[in-house]
Image (tube, rainbow, N blue to C red; front, side, top):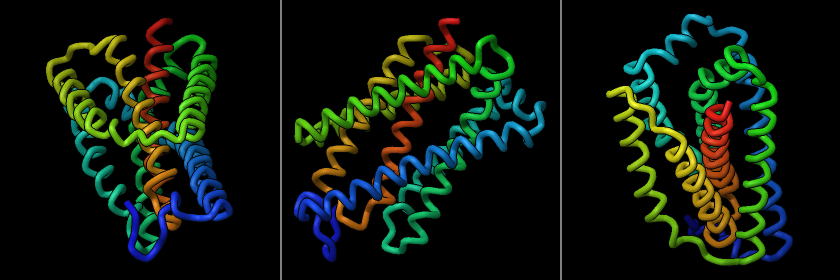
Length: 231
């Protein structure tokens, strides 16, 4: 992940590290804020019939998942570009994708279930707590969690296959799948935070923030599913 023209964060002075960390986590916070604002706008302007169709149509949902997969790859490539405007385009594209993916679930919880606001608040608090705890583990232990990469990639492909199979054949993946995805998201946060400490260079804070934002959203999604399934 390092660039020949810039030192890695690990090789930088303490002052440079602090600047990089501030920029990275500020971008994460702004990405989450942008997501919340965009989600609120989408719920207001997207016709209810279309949202319901997204929830009920397996083929449409499968197309959304496929589009999400492809556009996520594009966004990831953009976010590590040398050009800063391209990096922000990648981050912005990913935020838009996440807002569309989350729209049916948030609509269902907020408008079609009892206690939707309470569930959303609980999920946000749990996600923030888990993210903070995992970040603290990565920073305080100073351990290189790069060994998690293979497991994360393998788990990602297995989970994607199960999601596609579930969409095609109409079976519910259930609570334990959601728990497994929370574990996978947690491992991703540890791995990415370790990369922020050891492998990114000082100019890659946009790409670093996108990686963290993606894992936080994955964690939030499955925490929401777990809490909603208990109602």
